[in-house]
Length: 320
Image 1 (cartoon, rainbow, N blue to C red):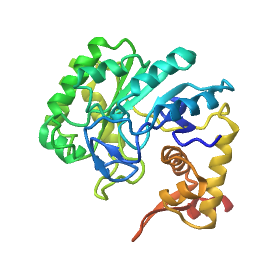
Image 2: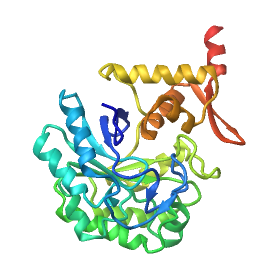
Image 3: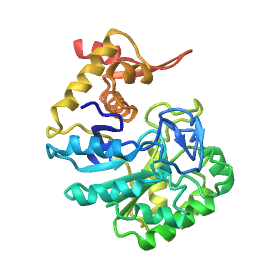
């Protein structure tokens, strides 16, 4: 069966081997973040809808899970905001009742959690990975380029209220952009918000492949360590790099090899790799990140965008 709404399973830095469920069409979101790895939002909205018929999603899940694959998580994620789907609760309840052995995770930008109904819709997942990049309204505007009806204060309050009813774990991600949310003033606001939200972990992240805007650059290791120290003794960590374990499914190695061979023939953009390989954007991003971290490929900016090419410098060094 060819899957339209499932992707992976992929190896995630935070979730291990995770099967993704994409409930939302490409780049339908409430934010248009400057660092987003999948490009600009083309439908900025707060409107919940049945964007994808859930019978299609459940049919794919039944087919994929029939073989009882080994998974660390089934994850609601994708190239848009999952909580925009009006029937996400039905999908959660279906998996809980039919496939209880699999923990559920939700990756969300937190923007809709100010709505009590939505908090109740998603409270049965086992792990939520919400984002909070800024507390002050000017920095929230600059980084997240949000829907005009959103306010940072409401986002924070939604997370605080969700913590009160949620029995699972919360891993709160803060994406650091130097010169914007790494100032003493903004970090102080973020730390105070984290005290109130009480996440199980605060995860500091930064750019590791090109974002939507060229001016966004990765924060230095020294800066991330400084921020980590500032947040302590709260439970804070810098998100570790992905690694491919020996327990990964064969298809992971096959797809990584196929992407490498494709790039060997000619440099490709993210969208070209997605099209040729017929893979979901999140899957391709995970593998490109891994190949870049291993030094096998590198990025090169051209007029048509970011291209991925074989790292000839590393290959030359290995031949010496």
